[in-house]
Length: 112
Length: 113
Image (tube, rainbow over the protein chains, first blue to last red):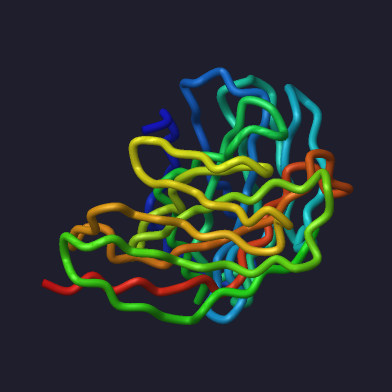
């Protein structure tokens, strides 16, 4: 299995608080992605990164920001969490854009 | 990226081959077919992908029709651990939304003893 670690695995927080999720990889892959998964919507891309300090938006990026200061770490931040951001968040990595993506085990985030 | 159509659910007896179909009639020449699966509460797992030739790896085989409008994922000897949602995804070599995978509803495969 690809070396991907997501932290925390579970988090409960309150509306309006900032939240940061971390994705750490040991594969030295160039591409990293953040998805969210909700019932009835499947997985949707939030943001992705194609290198250190190189990021771009996905289809559901509003309310989220990302940073990648090192190859191995990709952080997802909810600046001011809302209940609509309650979801399961998955990080994925790929060596190149055309290569398969490999996913982490997810972070279950609940915003009350 | 082309859309895909999969049956919502299928059953398979343990030890038998599981054949999961996918229709992608609007696929274009530079689009690959990818298969992933997601076991309950885990992250999606990559299985296999192909462009136009049949592919096989240690997990499965992928059969793509000559016109590339449909494909079949074959799990040769299904086990209870293969019970999962299987996603067929068509993705261009170079996508306007780089790297984006569009996960549809998939097929829920239930392997029964």
